Amino acid sequence: MSNGSPASDAPLEHEPVDEDRPADPDESLLGPVPEDERPVDPADLVEEPPLDDERRVRLDDTGEEI
Image (cartoon, helix red, strand yellow):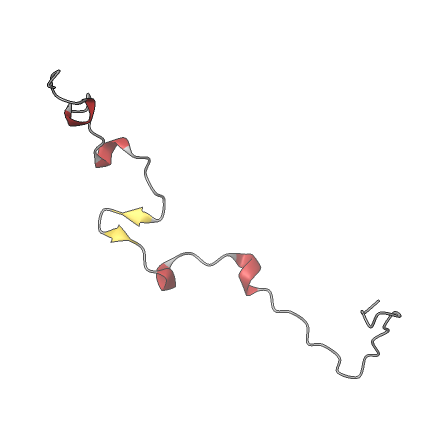
């Protein structure tokens, strides 16, 4: 039973090309930027204060910290 070519074989009206996709700000013409060359987020540079090992932890009846 042949009723013509199936719809899946029909060519697309417009095949997507690289110019059609949105530009990636982290990607240059040379390709993606390696992780070690990406700009550093200032929030990542903030150091956490050291924990005081002698602090007392209070636990409730179930053993969870309060």
